[in-house]
Length: 197
Image (spheres, rainbow, N blue to C red):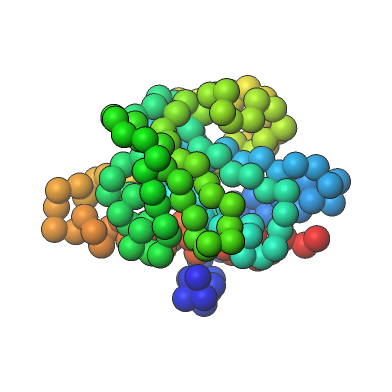
């Protein structure tokens, strides 16, 4: 994580402006001593939304910001993609499948002391996700365009990332997944580093 923190200067100002919306949402909830719920949304809830969910929860813990619970969802459910799972494992996350089948449930942790993050593919309005008072963070432009209304949200943030899926089954696959994991990690750590208690 220290390596990613050192990369904050590589984040363009235009992205920092978007990330400020996330920082402000978290900070406002913190000041009111209210639960901080974030749902990261992309089309299939298979790559970018899971990576963002995991990094947001990790960043909150890293900076000692309590009351944060991050979730993910899609406009449809598929599965947490094995390539994304591998890329997160390669970054140092411990990921264990607790079920099998076409949409396995995973437990994710970044340290032995941390609360485990439950990751599996679901629609953003699944009963396992908050139904009101959350920030909807749109991690792909397709989901942003196809979810004109996310019911129950308090704040909507458009924070799209390029899809590493574009490089599946190419020689660049592993490098592009690693690049996306680093980019999302850097931005989530930056956003939470800016939260003023």
